[in-house]
Length: 233
Image (cartoon, rainbow, N blue to C red; front, side, top):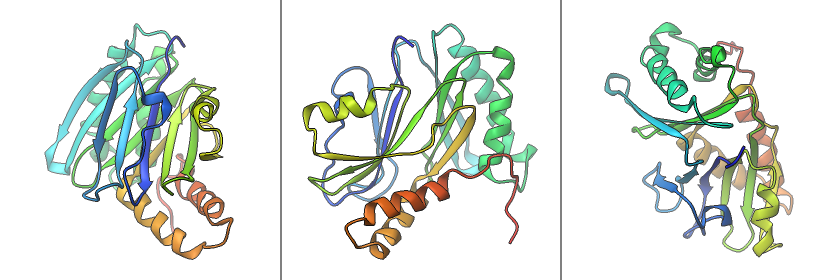
């Protein structure tokens, strides 16, 4: 892949969070998912050939941007258009199912392209979220803890050197928790829920290994089976 895809979401911070080194240059989109001053900040960086399509579903309070970057380009627009079209009635088609399950069905609609790509669906509605789809590409997913300002970010990238690049300038500043690689599956991050959960876990895990424990619990929370339509108690 000539260029890589990067994303980051701040889930805990008490002060302004410095941008990670990979966002120092290039075309970077930034924004905010919450009313909190620092939590909910996000940043996305894509290859130049990526394509973006907007999807407006006001009746379901969803205002989404679908960004697609394939390995070599060429089909980015076609995939983005397909995903945008399928998102229009995805909720109705699988009414009552979990969103992660719906995303798995959404991913399957692009299988005919036989393309390796990553798609990020940024829902900037009243209940914001990121829906991440990866087909054929290894998308690394990380918990990043800043030991200087005590902030926590979730980060993802197709760049296998992401950790090394981040550590290069300040080797001891960031602690990384490597989550399972996202490949041929979706991942759903409901920003407000994750920020709220992290706050609870931070209060519960106060020992020196508290951040590691919180990262482990978050893994169980995020990496559920996308083939299960609903969980029954």
